[in-house]
Length: 506
Image 1 (cartoon, rainbow, N blue to C red):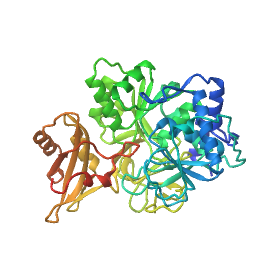
Image 2: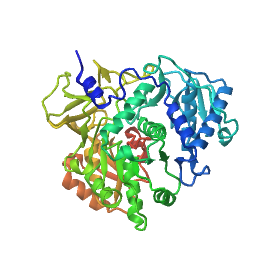
Image 3: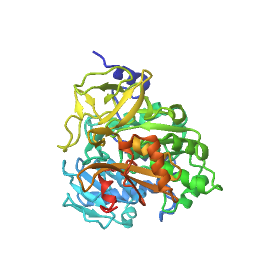
């Protein structure tokens, strides 16, 4: 019996076929570096590296690779990368892919313990926990021996051997690792070309404001470089970053709603800057109607909303203006993705009915690396259950109501925090918002909220706004202004940290 997703995938990606002979995605980068070594590959405005060409990035990657080989790293081993420098980070990824070492990027010094990490490479002074073999790097690693690295040939392992391990977002628990084979990476790259219309595939200069520790950031960096384009990352000075966008005529931005809100604020406060973006992708959270309108008015009219999960990305997308009036809508599900809404007994519900979401398809992995905690029930019967509650319309529009684990329960009455946050974000001046539950001194659960803004916000007016838009039980008892809201590299709120940023006496 044929699965419809098999047929659709072959229809959309006939060039991929079933007998792909490519072994290492780094080969495509090597070809681009040979073909046009002087073309721009990476730019971090204000970085001490300056603009980095393909030839220079290849030389840096080679130098790092020889350092890793000299330190005893071998093909098939797993090496963690902890770095705040996007250029060094990217060069290290390319080096490890070339020599067959499986890389896993992390933003935390406390490494996962669900699978063995053979070595950690870091250019930070932090103490690494969870790995006894730590390679301390610095800028000198990027210079020196730039001879071509020996190519690792894993014959027959294209579709089975891990090339990269990516950690999940861990917004409500511990991060889990998924293994990407070279075949899976190619599948996802082709899926991106098919799901985002005719504009994104033609963009050669792309600003990626999602960390390389995420599957989305890694995928787009590889996608752009392997086709000869240039990737941009944010610099330390916002004005310098905006100037670089105009100077290099950057065509596309890929970021979360949180980062998009930050940059639209910069542009709104800097009328002299012209945003050159031809298109923008928003992923990693709910794109509110208010934010969508601000972005399309000031930055880019072609804004695409995206729903993605580390385990099965990309999954759904839509032009933002087409779904702006449907609360919770995140995009139309790609035709090669199997999607269902089921009840608590795992039985499919009717179209338009709300329940637990599950997906399957050729861009989905079959499980996690090692033996992660809290992973029971995520993969069942060939389906992936992301832990989201929502519905699918007859047109296959995906509408998300919230996360199962993030639901706020007040006296048995439940609400998804996104519903409260959407109301908070619709108030003038509020840039970021987070809602959570806290138990008061009397032992009663209450709804609290934190907001971040670029200017003073009328808190009394904000509370009155919430009272008009929310049921009384879910109007935040306390709204606290904070400097920032904890987020992961994908831009999603780390919900288990919200309570900790508000002092108990607030």
